[in-house]
Image 1 (cartoon, rainbow, N blue to C red):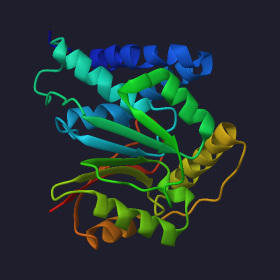
Image 2: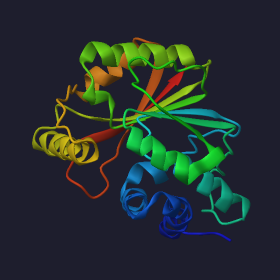
Image 3: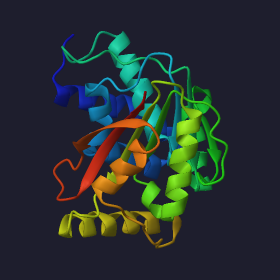
Image 4: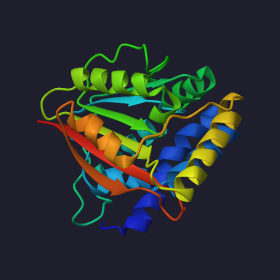
Length: 239
């Protein structure tokens, strides 16, 4: 059955968020709100960014929303419920999530069970292993510039030729829009972890230069949804 993008989003929000009922009311309602309102999740599917049989590393995974979303997409596609003209999503062979907050990791493990692997850790020090796709959504700016560069170098080392890094960053040249998105990020971080962390932004051109220096080919796409932010998705592929 062919679906519209709007109907597909609703279908996937229902499927993905259902997993989080076992992790409590907060986890369930947070999943519904985030998956239903953040354009990044649907954009990954529309662009066919997740290949079949991929090993996925999700740095800053939170409570495991990406894993739940990708599994819901595969389930819906297998049932014949997809958008005509959109690439059919692949089924990952391995999804590994890493996050600093132990509370989020516990919610992820409760919700996803054996469908994905989650561990508490710091992306600045954790072993990345090997992956075909690395996703880093909205967390790189919480570490110093030198640590950002080191994380990107280690991501490159973890990927094979043709491997993919998908990240969302703020464009520090975005003026008031960047300041607003930065304020929202810090506020969310405070309510999640009881801390108000400093942030370390870069302009979009600086992000692209850092990735190209490592051998990535970079594609960009605005990723604000209906909000007045300065967020950009970077699709960086090796080779």
